[in-house]
Image 1 (cartoon, one colour):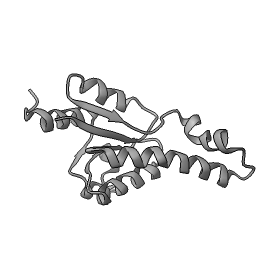
Image 2 (image 1 turned 180 degrees about the horizontal axis):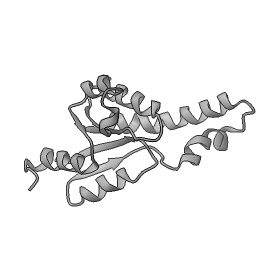
Image 3 (image 1 turned 30 degrees about the horizontal axis):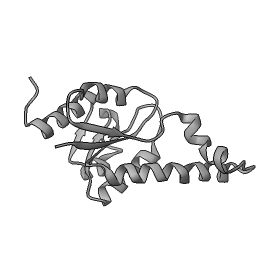
Length: 149
């Protein structure tokens, strides 16, 4: 069985690489958003033309990024959403809600400091992990039925 996993959320640390590397050898296909922050912010104006007003600049980018995000979440079997420590990831919360509304298997990843703030998001998830290695263990268990050693 191949699992399609969409990795959403925080883009400032290497958590995605940790999961992808840890899942080497498992039958998993990973997708996710564009993680180049500048490219993600400026894709709309780079492709569709400049905007003087920052609101419209951001909106063009958000709408183009939504094409990729929607497709990735819709095609995913599992959606992992990471909330980092440094920034408030409102888009990650939106992705989690979108995935939950679609009935996707949702895994939330965040530190203990965010447990209270994310209690509703966590309640919608099938698992809440604190470390990328735990996400890898979840994927391994789902695919092989084996527990960590």
